[in-house]
Length: 181
Image 1 (cartoon, rainbow, N blue to C red):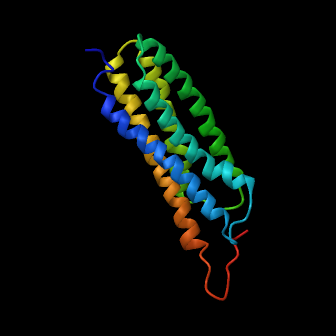
Image 2 (tube, one colour; image 1 turned 90 degrees about the horizontal axis):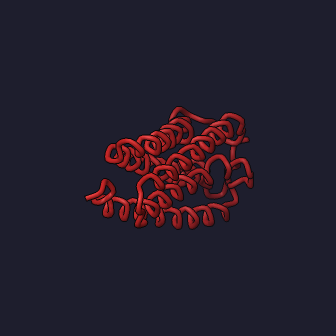
Image 3 (cartoon, rainbow, N blue to C red; image 1 turned 135 degrees about the vertical axis):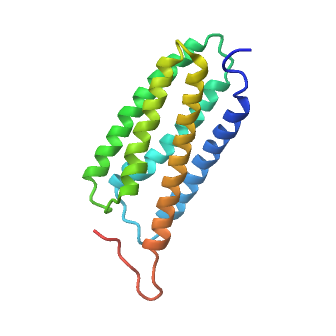
């Protein structure tokens, strides 16, 4: 039995969840876009919505990669290493966008789920990529943990965006609210 055997069910569940949530995110963004209270702002999408889809997409990609019939785990380890580094840099870009955006007043939870935890997840993926060359079994658990963390970050951030639009930007009958500048 190879180190990668036995992970099939985990990645079928995690990957299909990520795929379904990507589709749901598109539906939600489409519905929110029709709201008269939403201010069209590219800054918003690149800071809050796009990273959520990227995290879900990364989980879907990791699930597909680990489900492929690799002859050698070193190939997938190198891919994990590369994806982890790319994700790490992207997480830093998003963290910078959070700092400079003026659309929304950030709270601790926003910093945690939009900046800190993604950096942790992509760092774990990078470490797992390097570790897999020497000890594949523990590295697989680290990739699994990074995948789950990215999935839960995406779920949190999608839920947070929806509840913000429903409860904060909700129209009062007869007196529409304007978004805070």
